[in-house]
Image 1 (cartoon, helix red, strand yellow):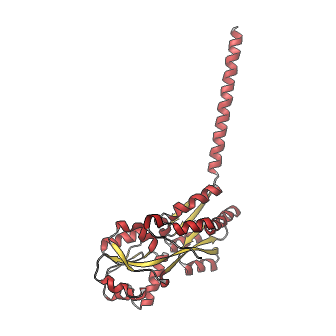
Image 2 (cartoon, helix red, strand yellow; image 1 turned 90 degrees about the vertical axis):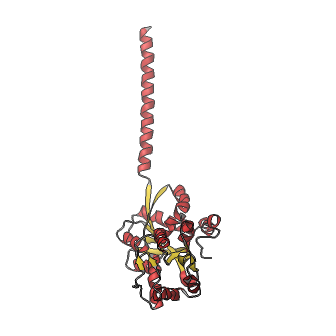
Image 3 (cartoon, rainbow, N blue to C red; image 1 turned 60 degrees about the vertical axis):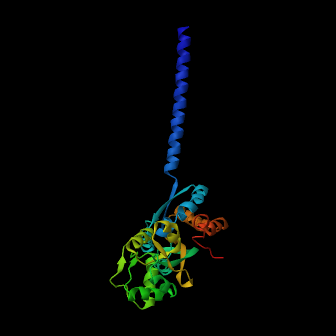
Length: 281
């Protein structure tokens, strides 16, 4: 009788041990699969990060493709440098000439325009200069700011916005070396916050301004026009391994898809009363 009881206990213990081993094996397998999941480093302009656009739109891509997209927000100039050093797998940026040069130099494969918005000039609320500036072209507004030594805050970081700013100074015939010109070397949201604190004028993309305006003591002084169009493009990088190249191409197609293009058209409307971006119809 004792032998029978011992046999039963032994059998139960072996069964439990086998279940435990099976569970451990399954857990280890899941951990291994998670650790080998495809990851993609997307380096982008700060404006796409500050507006929450990428966090919102990348969800579907990650779910559909089993990919983890790591977003790194930098100015376009720095983003392109990270592309050159292969510290980025794909770029989402907004400085056309620099992007085209990047491809001509062999660092990139292709440039696909996804959407656009506009640059605007903002300034301190209720400043008596605002009405005069609003009636000028963008380059004339820059000349007025320089000639009158008004406080101006620049990103100063070789970003797409800073590149546009420098082109406007050149068009204006004025130099940006006046006393109240300040380069801060920050992203767009941080630069706007500093402009607000300094009661300064600033060039910004409209998306970041709309997303942060409730915390700013700034208003739009020079509104959007065709000369201030701001195009965002995805740039694919050369010499990636086949798996990475395949997934980056899928990301381009994802942002070109009808579903995402429709999402882009609606992004910001509910929260800000107008879209932050527009698509090419």
